[in-house]
Length: 138
Image 1 (tube, helix red, strand yellow):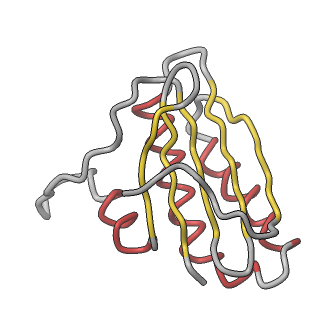
Image 2 (image 1 turned 135 degrees about the horizontal axis):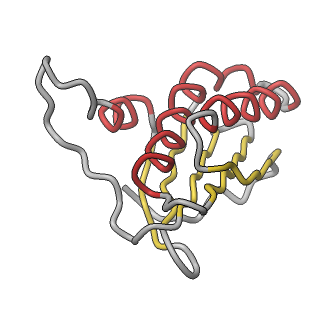
Image 3 (image 1 turned 180 degrees about the horizontal axis):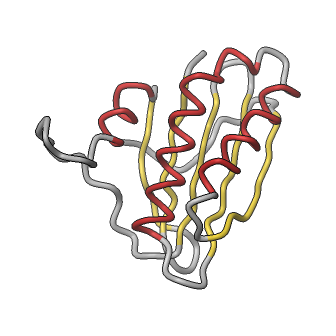
């Protein structure tokens, strides 16, 4: 895991507030698809980006966002990397990678993050909550 600072190179960005809803991961995937379609070479990040944005938003909705609060999604892409940030409103403690067995019904998401992300991390937000982020290479 590393810092919350993103790359200074020219990029295309998108930011959106999503409700604490099971529909939010789907909306996050649609927003990512739109950003990547409009960015030169953006399609190179589509596969891993879709999986990672789903995982991070799902975790924020289930574990990081109290009732009545929203999740902020920030997407940024340039020729070298896709950065996905999910801002939630609960605590500063980041996600914990844990061992799972073949019989567990959940808990594999961070394994996916670790495998697909070039870098990932968690840092405190200004005010309440945290930012969980990933960067993906093409």
